[in-house]
Image (cartoon, rainbow, N blue to C red; front, side, top):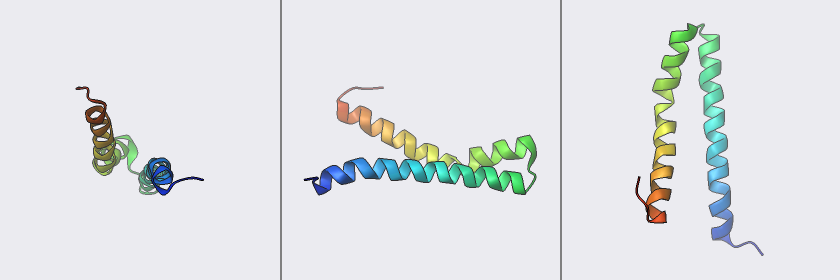
Length: 71
């Protein structure tokens, strides 16, 4: 039988990854509907995507630290 900790260890990254993909779609749709243009679209992804990139960076750094290695 699947343990709660094992289930959480598998489902949490999957759901967060899905949420990041959904937020990326929302940013793209916002840029499209507001007719932001190329520069505006890039700025929306840079500014609004910074939080997502911060989370991804945190996951990578945590993984590296738990592995015992360095950057």
